[in-house]
Amino acid sequence: MKNKIIPFFLYAFCIAFLNFTFSDEFEEYGISQKDIQNRLWNVLQAPSVSVPYLGSSVKSACRSLAPEAQATAIKKAGAFVKTYFNSEDFQKRYADAISKKYPKLETTVSEQRKAEIRANRLKGVQGLQAKDMEPVVDIQIQSAETFVGMESMLSSIPAEQRADFKKQIEDGKRNAAFFKKIKPLLKTNMEEFKKQYAEYLAADEIRQSEQTLARNAKSNADEYEKLKDPKKVLTARLTDFLNQSKGVDFAAQTKEMNGRKKFVNAAYEGKSDVWKFCYRMGATPTNTARAFAQQWLTELK
Image (cartoon, rainbow, N blue to C red; front, top):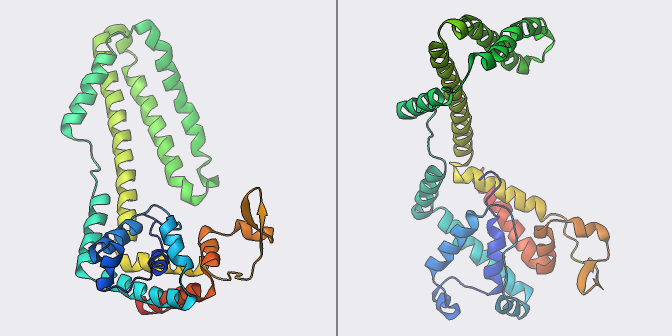
């Protein structure tokens, strides 16, 4: 959910368009406070910052409102959002959702899975022939010299990469030693060679699987730590909203091009959707939302 929560005020804008007063007037618009809470929750779970969809009825209602009425509605919308955000219901719902989305993951392969890997590897080597395996084994043995030579390069490797590079060398030398040890079995006991080779392949697969599990678990834990505190996430989203809605040129001119409105100043076409949405909203509701966001941000610090 890194950078995933949409600024609350974009949704507040939608509510402003409909001139909600957050009382019994909900019924006039065919909506309840519970509906508003669920909509807010869905907005919070959206994968990226975006502008809310506005149907034709919402747009029509918007056009009928004076900027001052929009500003009043935004203040009421912001107050409602803040109340819900601080409620026990929201805090519990958020905590439960984050814990479910980023659970603690296993970092080891189960014994049952290890047994399956070993059985599959043993089955897979049954058709091997000594004459086919001998060149493969020789290549592995000869690679030891390459890894020994790589040790002299360790001092020239950046410090942050040195540990991984050293591990690769150690793994390569260990593998070469293993193949050197089992090479005689190609001539004396091919069945034992297959058994040990299968175990070697299984151990390698298990090791790689557990490395992948460990990386995934760490990534999952990092995301959980980053998102577990909704206040920190909200602080980041409010800051993002303020940054994106800053410096809107409400006097910017537009022109028709191929049936679509475009800014006369071409540089404005590269502005974010939030910036353009604020432009369409106008100065009064945008500045009202920004003031509310700044005040809430101050309270969160």
